[in-house]
Each structure stands twice: as structure tokens, then as C-alpha cells.
Image 1: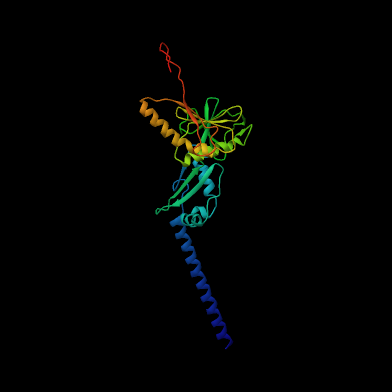
Image 2: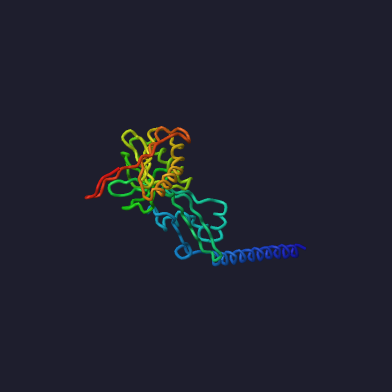
Length: 274
């Protein structure tokens, strides 16, 4: 009886070993299949697109920031599952990063930079800055046709840093004016400050003097309508006339203001006149 029990125990052990071996072989086979099926080559299977014109990051830096897990980011299916539920860790100057995996298991990374909202003209260059006041690019021309900020004195104008003025509260004035005009889909060419911090906005050839105050919402909101009326007046006269519009006393919509034709210098050899 004792011999028979030993044989039965040996059979059970052998059966368990065989089962474990089969499970192990299945796991090894699955791992091999998974590795060959979903493995990516970061150099060939990953494309990076940076939307914007700042030179702060290279495509490789963006890729390395997104795919930095030593195991997960070797396989397309794991990348797809992970970024379905989690966002990419933020980067300075970057609005967001989108990770997509197509049907061919290729990885597409799109980085959207924080867009510039305006620029500063200094030393012959236009310095573009975003809504955080970070200078993100420098160009010899205003290629983006953004509002130019004039008349301020700066303590710091360094690339990839927040610019500093002698009165940093004026930055909020710039933001408010720019965003309000953007929301209306209306373009302004220049925001300038005089020595008393009074604001003047230039739209085309027309200058709008707004004066000094904490908020300029009412005055700025009126500019598109004023521009349309001045354009109609020019059309009636059959010529383009530049105006200086004083809105310093405006506190609510409908308040009176005056628009004065700006006198232009006569051409050499010409006759001056009213």
C-alpha cells in the first residue's frame, strides 16, 4: 500500500510540473508574440509635430518627454491605453501635448505651444510673448501681424523668461485689451503707453486715446463700431482719412467722444490745405 501511495503522489507532482511548464511556455509564447506585435522603434514609428514657431523645444525633446517609461513606452498598445486615461505631464511654454496611435501602431505626438498674443519691438526685433508674459520668439519682422506694445520701459527682456516692466500691473492691461479684441474677432495694430501710463490703441491709421484707468472694457468694446462708422465716412468722401479719436471721458456705451481728422504733411512741392 505504501508503494502505491508514493506512485500516486509522484504522478500528481509530475502532472503539476507539466501544467506549470505548459503555463510557462504559454506565457513565454504570449510575451514573444506581444513583443513582436506591439514593439515600436522610437526612431521610425514615432512622429512629432510642434504647432507654433518657438524654438524652445526640439522634436526629440518632446518625444523623450512623452516616451520616457522604460517598459510601457516600448509598446504601442500600452502607450495607447495609458494616454487614453492620463495626460502628458506639462512642459513650460507648451499648451498641451496629444498622443495618438493609429491602426498601424505608429505613434503621433502633437505638441501645441502657448500661442503668442502680442509682441514688443526692441532693438530692431519683435519679441513675441504669450499670455503668461513669457518671451517665446524673436523675429526681425512682425510676421504674425500681432499687436505691438510700445512705450514701456523693461527691467528684463530675456528669451524664455517673463518680461518685466517698471510697472508690471500694465501687463494685465495689455492682456485685457488683447483678449477683448480677439473675442470680437477684431485686429488692433498697436498698444502704446505714454509717460503717464495713458493708453493709445492704433487700428490701421486711426489712433484711439483711452487715457489712464483701471479697466478699458467699455472703450475697447466701442472701437469696432467706431471703425465701421469711420470707414463709411471715408467711403462717402471717396478717400482714406486718418483719425485721432479721444475716448478718455467715455465711461459707458453711448458716451460722447470726438474723432478728429489727422492732418498729413503735404508732399514736397505740393500745396497745403485744410
